[in-house]
Image 1 (spheres, helix red, strand yellow):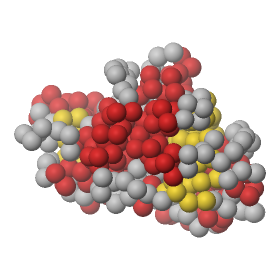
Image 2 (cartoon, one colour):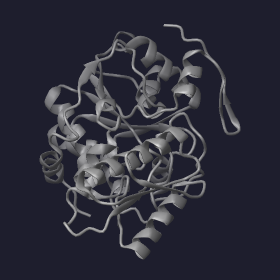
Image 3 (cartoon, rainbow, N blue to C red):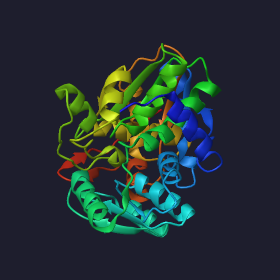
Length: 333
């Protein structure tokens, strides 16, 4: 499927004033990392997450007679689709698995969408969305494999390079690849020498496993502090797999323990409350898995988290993730 910078530029015009222009701020962690480290604060979007960009671009580009929309989601995409559907005055049915955090399910419902909870994986939720398309005529808005969604997320890359043309590296949270693929296309069309690194958790990283295999594969989904990065990429992936394979310079995986410490660092050093998925870039640098070689940025993708878990982490208490226990750790600057 052809995808280019032109799609991203068109998306910027379509979403202008609804889901754009978030701040890019310096992190105090840069002093520790040895290079200027910048944070793109997508947590200030109206739904608290970057996913609004792609959802608005896709839904506002649908024909006037659309019957309604559906999607599968781990949480933030569902909020984006619900918000954009309400703004356009169309029905939205969001399909989520039983692994979705309660706070994110409640957030979707609060925006007026119907929520269907099915199965134990993103693939099961996607199957329910496909059933709704076949039986009810709804339009499926993929979280990552729709060119309009990818283009919407890619506008972050435009904003990053326009604010800081001297960026050396962008660290992008990586799940289905819509964000990473879109940002990488935008950034590398502007500066072909920029380094774009996808970061994911080391348990259930579907895009990483797929690129290693050379084709989309299924992975077992398990609970994670970076729950927004869970889910597969779809065995019939049409776009995001190819974009990530072609445009990402590297993929780095971080552990739950490294995510835990990064959440503490960004809270205590920068006073930012955010999801575990947001700090995988921070975790990659803190752990030494990525070395910064110049001004760098990461995307703070969302703030729709379970505050009870966040409180446990800030207090240094253990966190239970299914059959995995992340041992508590008191933060030390």
